[in-house]
Image (cartoon, rainbow, N blue to C red; front, side):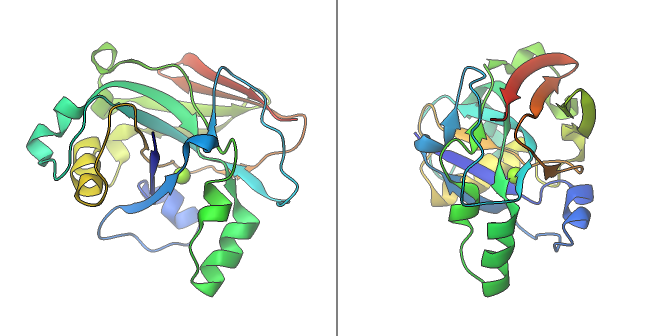
Length: 202
Ligand code: MG
């Protein structure tokens, strides 16, 4: 499986990183070795001094498809969950300054903690509130109604380049409030007030 991630999908987050608003989704990939499941601890890696959390709603692809029309995109996922797109901001800034790819800053081991997934029919996914707490303090709060590119637009766009397969995950972008983590932190992610994910930082 693969993880497809969307950058710059919430206006307030684009502003906080002083990025340009994209005309099409910003896409990158993480390998399966980026996954971190079962609320396992994240171990702060030695190659960065500035790892940031980015909480994101995650879609789970349920069938194979490419060149998916936006009007059929809803058939390609049944479940949603929440994840954290851990980002080595110091490495990312170095890559961006040189015009180089971001992979080492985004796709490293365990850079993608994910929750369990629930049926998308359990919630109004077009108006889904989600949040991240760091040591009990709310740092990020978002609503999928504020996305620049909808879930269906994202599926249509990325499937032009990458065949989607059953079990692939799509991270759909983070709202404002990203920030650094420290060893000893405790991150918790919520969908509509329900705790889905709990990640100790060691
Ligand atoms: Mg992200």
